[in-house]
Length: 442
Image (cartoon, rainbow, N blue to C red; front, side, top):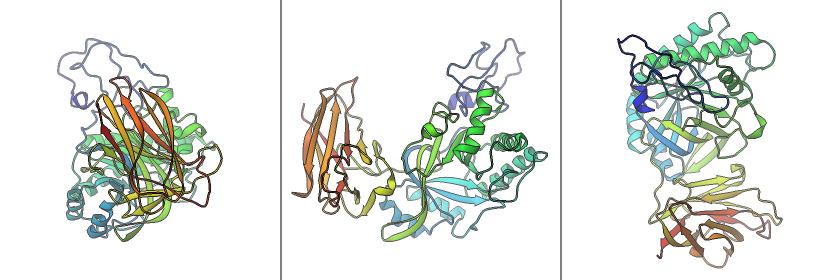
């Protein structure tokens, strides 16, 4: 994608028909430099459209993990304290007529400092809203949507440059919820605005993102893409669905917003909003996000000693609602353990999965039990080339690394360990998750 994005049309005459193929938001472009062969979409619902301009190459990092956004940029000392958290990126509001918080701490120096601390950044712009927005906010209209989208992009680029966020950065447009099914003119205006926003950003060397509700913006973008009328889709999408799940799928509640759209590291999910969390002794009111996309800056993940992974590292994810997973700052191998209450029936509500990338061989698996939040019985399921085994561990009896079994990894079969909250006995007890260590024995 990065190579194709650098292609430009040559001066040679056009000798054949060409149509760029791919899922919405793909950076494929079709020019006479690349091919003279017509290409068709190969996946259901994929948009087939010629891109009017090449997608700028990202200068950031592809992150799959936890991020947060907050209204005003925290101080650099707060950001440094929060490096003890499992979050690797932060959303920052850089401008827009409807931005709720001013620049405050935000500056080019701030951006440079927090990038140096290892943070990834998600620039957000909040401008005029849809004509049928649900909050009665200032809006663009059907007649000026394209012009306003272009103007918003120009202002966003100027703000990004002022804060030291250069070409290749993705800027997210915050388009709040709007009424659907009332008039087609509102939907038409939204699509025209987003198209103009994306096209103008590309023209300035920046990448396009949009934030919105899956039942409104994401459904409308998906339907337009399926119909082939979304000629310039945003490069990535960010949907707000406060279900607590660390996933980039909107699940079955939004059938038009398919998982096959924007699937190549192009999605973010705001899964929980408006709560306070404390790391490094400092509290911030945040919204929490699960990110699988490109962000500005290094977005440094937590690295556990040896062949281990846990909260904040690659290969680890919580399952079930994060409302019921409580952080324990300072506890665990890297100070990032969590706990939840078990339930005493057969249904799993919350869990955690460790999915390491290991060379072929046999490994002993050990789960780290932190001192706090570990008074109950934890049920682990180990899956690998040797089959599936289950181990129930009484976390109250001893702490530190505890052996839970063995896994076999082959070139075709990876290993996976899952902790579920079901079958753990007393609901007044607690079970903790932290580091999972894999030690190769053969």
